[in-house]
Every structure is written in C-alpha cells, then in structure tokens.
Length: 341
Image 1 (cartoon, helix red, strand yellow):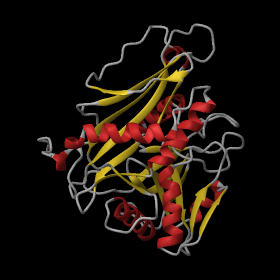
Image 2 (image 1 turned 45 degrees about the vertical axis):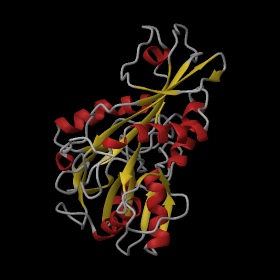
Image 3 (image 1 turned 60 degrees about the horizontal axis):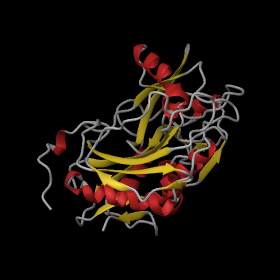
C-alpha cells in the first residue's frame, strides 16, 4: 500500500482530513449497522441536543507503524470502556465495546495510507465520539445519537523534543465536587478553555487545577493527569473522584512497577507537597508525557530540581519505555497492542 505524499517529519498537531470515517446512528432504541463514508460533514437540526445542552462524549487514541511494519493501536479496549462510562453518566446509549474496536479498525484500515511510517515521529490520531443529534428544547436527553470515528495524521506534540513547561495554579475549578470531572465529556474541556487562554495570555503553558472542594489537593490540568517523582525515585500520582482516568497514566503506572521496578503511590497529593518533588510530568495520549519545570502559585514559584531544559531522568525512562512498547521495540504486556489486520 502506497502512503500519501505528506511531509511526515514536518507535520504539526492539527487536523488533516482523511478519506473515510465511520458513522452509526441510534434511533428507536437501537444502533444501526454502521458504515464508512467519505463525507466529512455532519448535518443536524438547529435544535440538536448536542448544540443546546452539550450532550457529547469523546475519546482519543493513536495508530502507529511499529518497527516491523505493522499498524497497531494501543489499548483500544480501555477507550471503549471509558466511552461507555462517559455515555452512561450523560444518559446516552452505550456503543458496544466490540463494535467500538471494530469501528476503529475499519476507520484505520480505510485510512492506512495516512498512517505515518515508523521513525517519522508522527502517528495517526483517532477520534471516536458520540452526540445527541435530534431536536430537544426541554432539558432532557436526546432520543437519537450518532457515534462516529475520524482520523488525522499528526506530528509529535513537541517539535524538537519536549522542553519543560511552566504551569500556574488556577483560582478557578475544572470540575465540581461529585460532578463530571471523571468522564471524557466535551463540556469538561469547554470549562477549561477560559482558564487555558488566560494562562497563555499571562505567559504560562497550562493550568494546575486543585480539588474543587478544598483547593488544597492537586487534581489535573485541563486535559492531562499529573505524575510526580520523589527525590528517592518513587512515582506519585494524584487520586481523586473528579480526575479523568487517563489510559496513559494507567499504563505508565504499570511500566513504572513492572518494567522499571519503581515504587508507585496513587493517592491524594497536597499542593503543599509539590515543592518537595524532584520531577513532574503531565501524561496523556497526545504527548505521552510533558515535562513540567516550574509551577507558579501567585507569589510562590516552585522550580523542580530537574530544571527547565530537559525531562527529568525518571520521567525520561518512563517515556522511553512506554513509547518503546507502543512502537514495538519493547515487548508489550498481553493485550496492550491491538494489530490492525
């Protein structure tokens, strides 16, 4: 199969329309058979529930070309499970897990020419999503839904390597106590946009959100979980009911224990502890791990010993090991790598 004529090494992290996408409709209490389509546009009523009441959930994962030339995805079963949990929380019908994986396979196969070659640093980003599609004017769930999957080739999240970023502690909250912070809903990301843009205007890269109840515990950023490394090499990651359960974080925790022999603590992390950590990183699908060099809380500035020039040594090992697993250079745990046949 011939690849598309794309300058893979200079791809940014943005949307490029590919040839096919998958769509399935829910109506009269059932999902239809689903199909691939070349049409990248969606036509919905002006009163569609997604437009009026933000009834939408989504996922994000990637397809890779491994060292031996296979096209694979990474732990898509966990994306299927998380989408189901998100849908249930917003009173949406669950798209079956086996059909989710099949839809991802169909979409990646149909766009195999857009899967970047091994060694290019680029990947094929996969976006499954669901939304309420019929007209709803009273506050209630939709009766009809669409489940869709599209793909787009993307370059590495950080051009020229991941340089440590600077965060500020936000005075605003990302999620409410006992709210929807633990699901991947569009509304959660909308809530973080103002704080993100304000941080950028103030010269910061991202926000650190503290727990909404007490503002004393570390939660996450607008779209990534935290990992901290203690001065004696222990991995610490915050635990909270209002944190999105990151698949990348879950995988890194296993890598830390099983591959690197590190001790891991998943627990509440007080902000007052942060100054005592040696390294800090943000983990998510897009960048795997983004190193954090500095956190600013009003007049207090915390600079980690790992510095502002490069990843700390432990976070670098975690990054190298997980990306090595994803790219086929390191043997993966059973079930982690899903080959697109």
